[in-house]
Amino acid sequence: MPLSRGTLMVTAPLDLLLGGNFSRVPPVQGRYDAGYGLLLRGIGDCHFAAVDLAANKLVMDGDVKHLRVLKAGKLGEVVVVARNNQAVQLLQVRR
Image (tube, rainbow, N blue to C red; front, side, top):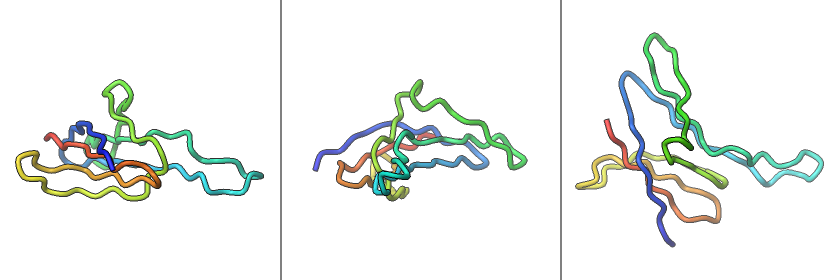
């Protein structure tokens, strides 16, 4: 299965990366698949600012099921994005 790659900038104190979409719902309810992920940059004192992912060429499309941070040798930390019936996406973390 091919990999998709991108870059994710992470800052202190805490950033939140959210992925989603859910397409397995009854037709009456409609699909929940219009999102491309959301990065909330921590600005301190439990406040966050949304980052425009499209402007940063970071898009997590599809039915995201899991996000996991792993150490990947020379790449450092990467976020592995597992999507339903799609290729795994890797996002390189830069601090």
